[in-house]
Image (cartoon, rainbow, N blue to C red; front, top):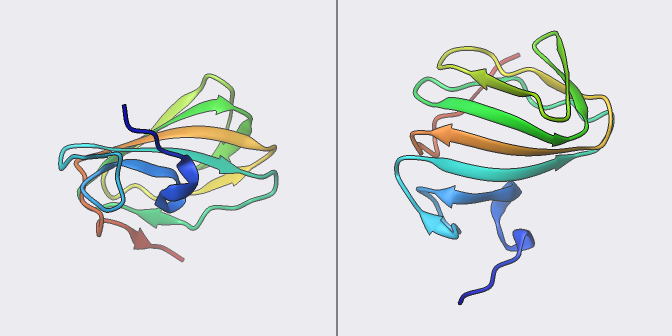
Length: 107
């Protein structure tokens, strides 16, 4: 058995085609994110990847939609990710394929 701690990974990303990773994989990325109430994520898009977000606990507004615990949303390639957190929120994020440089900031 090998032990890990989330603090040892970049922004909660634990699986994917990058270092450090618990499991290096070119097909999928997995992360656990925690954002505090009031945090506004950087608007961005992906040209290749599709990104699924599962709200483990908390609430947020994603592209104008109010979502909370148990909800999931998907951003497809070229859609703009625009998220604001209404309360402290835990998320699981899954993105495929794993292309680490596939993130483009949008104003």
